[in-house]
Length: 126
Image 1: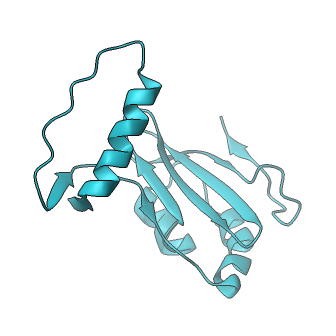
Image 2: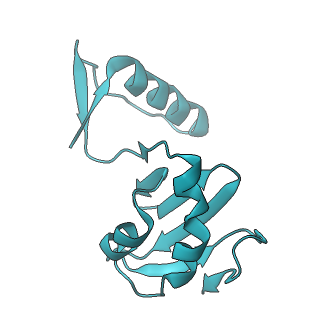
């Protein structure tokens, strides 16, 4: 479980309100201190040397691998989202943008490098 500051929660709440402007949205009262959320994207910073290893590692991945297996090979993603609408890991740094999409059981469905020429294996999956 993640602990999020009140200002971050407020920013998310405003974004939600703007995206749902045609619907009435009731937000809970935000207590002083912090609010615990069940899901939240994580953000990781990586070195240039680490990012340079991604293309080879990315090409060694296979459809059907678990998220844990992927992260054991690739390392922690720079951005990871697990929600009912998005379930993916993103490796985005130093000119690389690699996406790995998962199903509800956290098994790889699709991998894309967005046509990056430094990733020889290209896109795989559905």
